[in-house]
Image 1 (cartoon, rainbow, N blue to C red):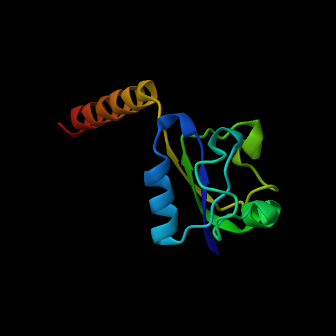
Image 2 (image 1 turned 180 degrees about the horizontal axis):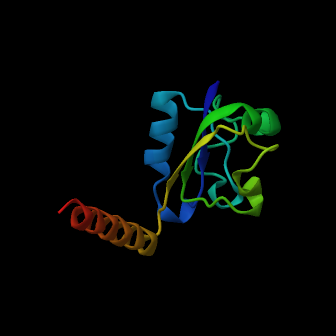
Image 3 (image 1 turned 90 degrees about the vertical axis):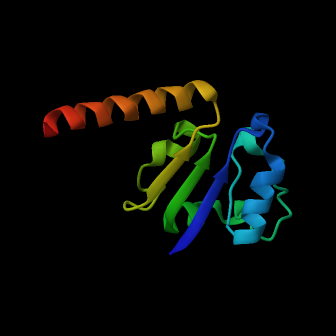
Length: 115
């Protein structure tokens, strides 16, 4: 199966880093509405013209600043492959803080159970 990248959140001002990642790793990508223009649709790695097929056959999807909302059909079959793995990278600082707090709490709770 293919790898697949969805670039979202152009407001993160990370266009150059995302373009470099896609081009150097030759990652197929599909931009969500918020990510349009980060990587041009003329890129040889853009799968917009085969969106349905790309979504159904992806085994890994990296979401850069995008959410699994109605635009992405909540990541559910039949639009997506049932075994697809989502890697969601939040670009909003508040999400990162919440994630870090959650992981610290989970790690702390795990340590309490071990003792």
